Image (cartoon, rainbow, N blue to C red; front, side, top):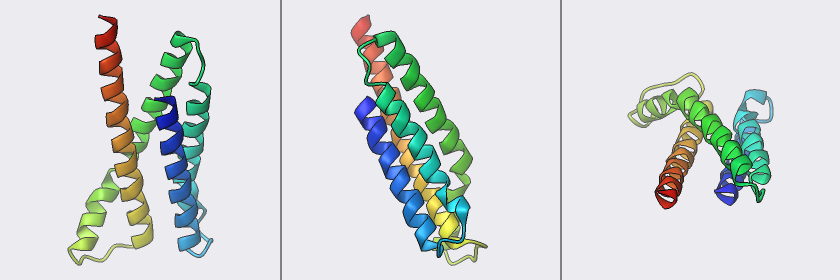
Length: 124
């Protein structure tokens, strides 16, 4: 799961950079996905340790950050759906980025939970 965490971290970094450039480089909050992605990538790098207890602790921290990020951005999915139905939103690029970040983090959290379940079953 360490490599998966690094991969999702880089996805979020790319999302943040493209969102920042997409807003004309004047909205620093568009870099929030990049900051979350950098933290995940760093945690993924540290999780490549041979020590199973340390790896388990780091991965639980990473999935907690992913879950908190998902919960913080999940309203973006609702706003994106509203946008697709023709409703006006205040900042459409921001809502698209929040929705994308939410979906990326949801996929990450689900993969982590599945991995944790499989690891527990393997130990039993």
